Amino acid sequence: DIVMTQSPDSLTVSLGERATINCKSSQSVLYNPNNKNYLAWYQQKSGQPPKLLVSWASTRESGVPDRFSGSGSGTDFTLTISSLQAEDVAIYYCQEYYTTLWAFGQGTKVEIK
Amino acid sequence: EVHLEESGGDLVQPGGSLRLSCAASGFTLSSHAMGWVRQAPGKGLKWVSIIVVDGRTYYPDSVKGRFTISRDDSRNTLYLQMNNLRVEDTAVYYCARSPGATAADYWGQGTLVTVSS
Image 1 (spheres, helix red, strand yellow):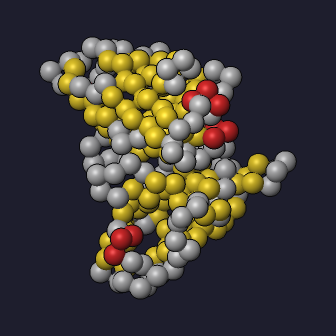
Image 2 (cartoon, rainbow over the protein chains, first blue to last red):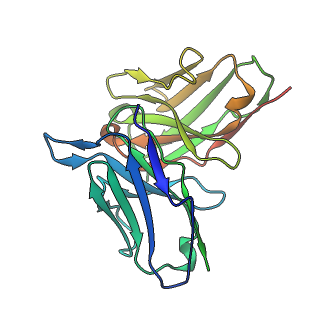
């Protein structure tokens, strides 16, 4: 089974500053026939269900602000919030869908300094 | 508009059973893979089961043999039958749509299952 490990577990950033969350998979989630990384990022605010932000490692979902960006390939991925806003306080999860076993990272809590 | 609404969560004793439902609207359930994801209090997300378009189902070892995912195409509803429940199954259970068994693009609000004596 694939294991997803995020770092850091928590992050405190000033408003307007950059926040960077890392995600490492125990095996590659790059599917060579289509050259796509089967990796998603979700945002979960307190008391709410998760919300899909990024799929295919770097494709932002419709309506997601462009301050959110995903990057990486193979086993190492990053979610960047370029200019943190108050409404971005949440827990962020990466998830692989390379297998039908859907492994999630443990989550990274983002707070305002 | 796509909408998912879970129901069926309750307080149940260890060893008991429960069936969760997820009513879908705004799309045809059978045209997408669908999954259940749970979140224990204060913890992260854990996948519980998935049913793909052709009806095949998948489970992690932690629930295999105890949980069964199914769907009723006539009701456009997804189910999760949970048997032999354990204290560690206590969680909010979310259903989620997964186009092509990829990223989950729509989620319900969740239903709380509490397993306690």
